[in-house]
Length: 202
Image (cartoon, rainbow, N blue to C red; front, side):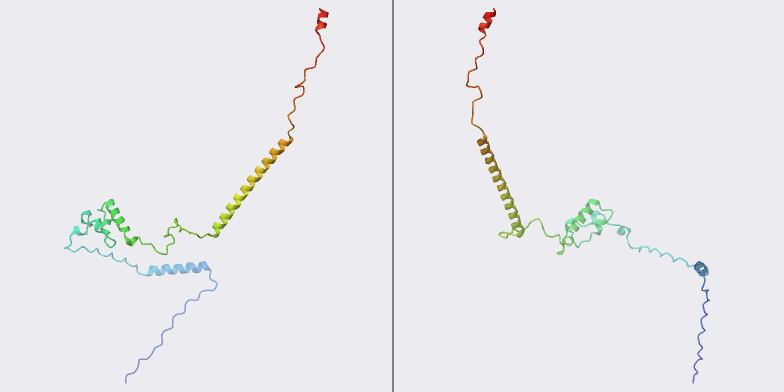
């Protein structure tokens, strides 16, 4: 019969050093910083990881194949659609004008011109349907205001005409009949005859 090994209890962990309760904050901070610096000095310096070696291309590949294609190798713009590969047009060997034409064709495709039905601004708010015989409350109110202004203008004109006729009738009644001016039809009064006095003096 095999005997079981004798079980030994684990050794108790050493109790941490008791710190004085009245240790100042700065003293505790300084002690912890010193302990951390000592641990860093004791720890072995970690060597930097070696840089990954650049993998050389296989000997059978052609260097010209790695270069971006030129404009001659690109498909014509007429054959492009929304599912075509446009990465070749981003090559630095492609002219800016050709790249712009390719991107214009891409962004004019149906894939990029879909308008969401939840968009609030897709409707044409410049054309309104004809109401026909429907008269809204705003239209009634506007018609009433227009009629009220027209009646006020007509009453003002009638009052002005009546006032003008009253003024003309008063002026005719107040004017006296035409009378001849004083002394207009009378002969001038005869003054003293001075002819005899003149002969007498002569």
